[in-house]
Image (cartoon, rainbow, N blue to C red; front, top):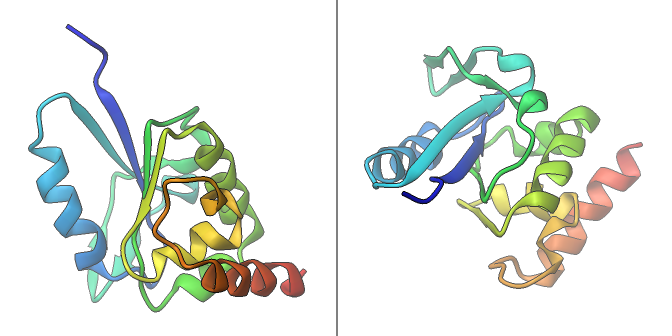
Amino acid sequence: MPQPTSVVMPVYDGVTQLDFTGPHQFLSRTPHLDVRVASLGGRSITADRLTFADLDDLTAIESCDVLLVPGGGGCIAAIENDQFMREIARLGATARYLTSVCSGSLILGGCRVSYRPPCGLPLGMAGFASDLWRHRR
């Protein structure tokens, strides 16, 4: 039997819970996928008054086949978090597929991992997110 496809869903404070719980429900029921929800340090994340615990440590995940970044009102704060963005860029460089839900595309654009096809991020938005992260430093 082939190795399962690894999917990483990084979450952060202010993520829209439906942006990751919707895809998570579908993907976690799909055969031959290993879906991991992760945060910096594996800490619990509160989203829309729901707390998600027992998360994987984003920094401990070596690589993934699919990087799926959910969106949410906290995406700007996530973009301003250098450690979070380094981890997204690192994992994005290992992924065969990059995808996002809603404003999660700004996070991918902010670390410039979405500049290689296939990606669904308009280049103008990628530039905006990247400039936002760069100017913050």
